Length: 289
Ligand SMILES: [Zn+2]
Image (cartoon, rainbow, N blue to C red; front, top):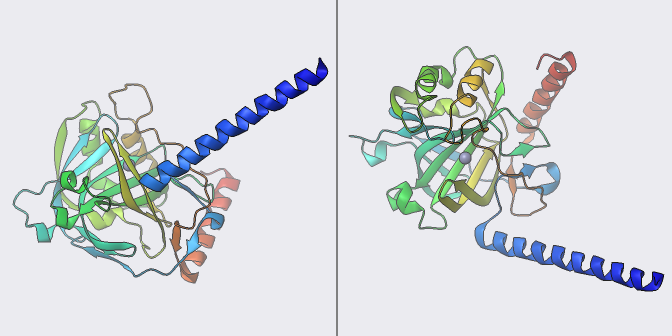
């Protein structure tokens, strides 16, 4: 009897292992086809260090009018392109990007997406760009290399002047009205970038938004920009379609070891990170944060 039970248990374990292997294989096939599931937990162990050409930003210093809206999932800033020549729109190129990519919109995740060395920042912005030659975000979705997304982390910090001041009132105006947009003038998109943009992770991953699941080139800056606590509260307190549910809930972060995740950084970036980590450690030890 004991022998039979033992054989039965071994058989059950065998089935379990086989099921597990088949889901792993399926996950691998899906990822081969679609790129890595974003977001990703970056660490020293799962990246390849590689020197890439510098990222180039065009028209990021110009001021633009935007429409700010509560999408029902997040706060989004859409560029108002009325009367603007295509060549005058904000564009990014260089780094891992083979082509020019034009900015379409920015949205935010306050239940953060990516992590670095296990650290979660309080806010992450996604600057979503489409391949310029496709002419629009909608057209770009038809191409495997149609999207490039810059991800920027925000940490609490001393920020007397920051980009959120420009539209925090607008957030309050749309916070109770899903889909209702308000115009905000004079937004300079360089204000969303961290001070240091030479250090970043990059990989081919997925872009998940309601109704969209596409491959995109991700560029995730390792240095955070800053936000005030009250500004983050304004963002994260908006009403959503799901009402009372945490909006823009992030996908589970993938832990992985993959040679296609590249870290472009240098000694200077490592020193900046060391100083940042030490400062955070002291704040946390003092219980200030
Ligand atoms: Zn996003």
